[in-house]
Amino acid sequence: MSMLDFIGELGRVEKIHRKPHIPRDKAYNAISSYCPAISYDDIQILIDETVFGNAKVGVIITDNQICGKDNFCDPFHYSLPKVSSLFVKKGLMNSTLYINEQQVIKLTQASGAKLVYLFERIEKYLLISKNDATPKHSATPVALSTSEVPQTSAQPSTVLAFNPSPTQPQAQTSLPVFDESIPVPEPEREKVESVMDESLEESASAEEPKSTSRFRRWPKDNLINSIQTDKHVSAVFNFIGDVLSDNKSTKSAALRREVQGFLASSVLRLRKEYIDRNHVIGLMNDVATMELMIYSIAYLRLELADRGVDPRMITYTMSEGVKGFLSLDNSTNSRNILANLLHLAEAMGESIDQINFTFYMRVLMSNMKGGLADDEFDMSQLRTLASFKREVPPQEALGKIIEEFAIAAMDEIGDISSNRQMNNAARRCADTVIDLF
Image (cartoon, rainbow, N blue to C red; front, top):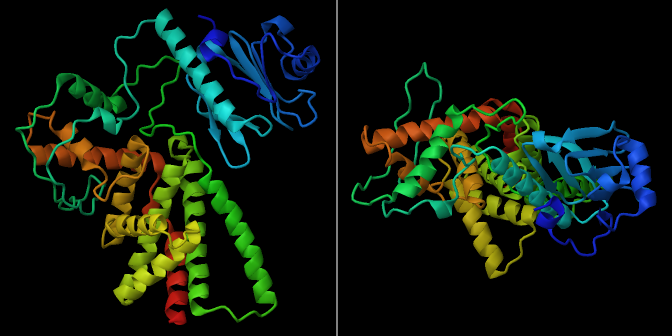
């Protein structure tokens, strides 16, 4: 089957041209601009990234290569047989194309949803073609879907603080009760065991570098852009209010503004300094952004509690701040969302060590699930993994798995406990909240 047959029909999509309906003038402009070694007949897909339609900026895809050019950048060329990953992440204002886990071009003219679909199909086509050409002995999934894990009836208890340093004694961990009477199907066992072996397998060739990330890719990444935009808009209005000496706002409004500002700054800081800087593509999505927000709520809540603020005032403060931050109304759905988020933040722990540790586990398990994990970060998956370690007691096996998962997540994201800016921002916000009341 050809690539175009596998992709299927895209329908009428402006700026994405599919053979045999590629305008010759656009194709020749694109070829002369960034892909001179090909001919018109070679082009399977042409993506025009220009406003006025001259196609001198964009992407060309042939049967064996992909090339393109972004504005004010040098052209890029990749041989498709050597491409290990090819996908688009859709943002609020643009869509970003990644090749081999590297950003190559931002696309603003074509439909983001169509671009996501197009490159998902191309990536699957390339994978199938490689598998047909070179049979693999086994396949290792990047992460485990919750639908692949048999559920157990054991009820987990809270995991306490964890110290990843091998030179220091580990904190005690309260682990769930293990039920050996629950059978685990052999096919499921093979799937889950492959997750544990993933970090040990480094057999990918030089032409096809294997990603060692434990985080799955999820396409939607709109929330972070919305937070960035809202933060800038709020900053402008706050500045205007200060200049005009507008002191008519209530204490509640001032409180909401302060907590909103802290949450926005914290989420953006964590995203930039840990996810973007370390290029953790699997956490560039709305689910991970929500986890950053939950962590920020937990951090500020703990700071207020350490100051001796009345628990009812803490609840009121966080409720007002989160409502403003997410633009929640008084509907039943909004109240449920608010209550769930505050509960998840509170369940992260009663110390900064617990919160930091739980963050790594939550973000990893939510990423596997493709949605927010529960208040015990979906421990059923970890219990299933522990059930395969027959040579050691269940609690010991589970403790080892938790340790491995937390260390792997911290190694990839970075050590958030060392972020002094987060601590200082939480203190300033708490000071303002206390002064208001």
